[in-house]
Image (cartoon, rainbow, N blue to C red; front, side):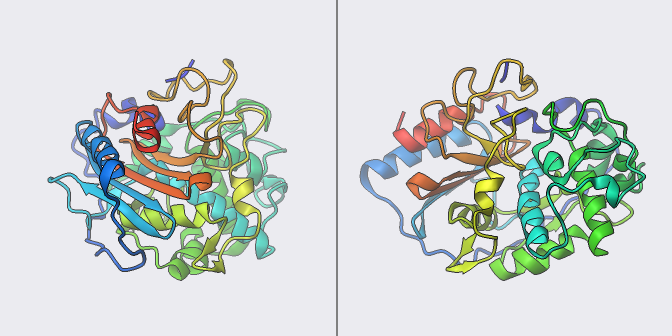
Length: 358
């Protein structure tokens, strides 16, 4: 039925890219003093060091563990400078839930509104809502070659990917089927741009990233200037950690509410079509056999998909090349793992080593 989240950008889309240069945003982001360092010792240190060795042997670049109010463990591969931003690919998706929550709080968006009320040209028809776009149950067809592979390049063939996605037909009724892909968030980007007259990324910078002090090396855009909400962000482990702490703390950032009360609970509530996927976040839930997760290469085969023996409240943002932001509110933990992609990587194995010393 299912298999690790390496498939978050199918390998077929990323091979055979020819001579076209990819967008790259690797200007250094110095590690700041947002979080104190309180390194663990003894048996817990040995446990985390074993997990870091296992991760690095599977092309891991960074492993950062945060508990309470401090970084308690960090390990970086010798070949990686921790100030260098990496492309977190689909790890970017999780910012869209915060984006929608903030727009709703500002009165600019309703999660149950029909997208066609704002974008009558939407080819998919009536019934598509921001909620279905965020849960990946919109029913809109996917074209990952045009919307994902092309968007990684400096020179692109599809100039306006938002408009392209708005023109895609539907393949199922909204809310009925979970299908992973970039079209949902491209349509969401088109909707938001039309409603507020501003880039979704500019809005996120103003309302969330700047107040948090969260920094990026850059963000993939299409030639029309649209930020790729599905896979655009380049950042470091220590910066991505900030977002994980915000989610762990229910939208509070150092005592200040940056997200609406109860918003993170909404982001971590799955759909009937896939209870293991919230509004752009993966959840540690079991799913029925008919939910097609066959494209994902390292989910658990049985039981909860991220960590069968792990806490039910565990959730994650996940990107291609095994980039992970894992949040465990019940244990006050946030884990960031950056990688370069390995067929031997397994989320349940790494989480078992960190959480239980397995």
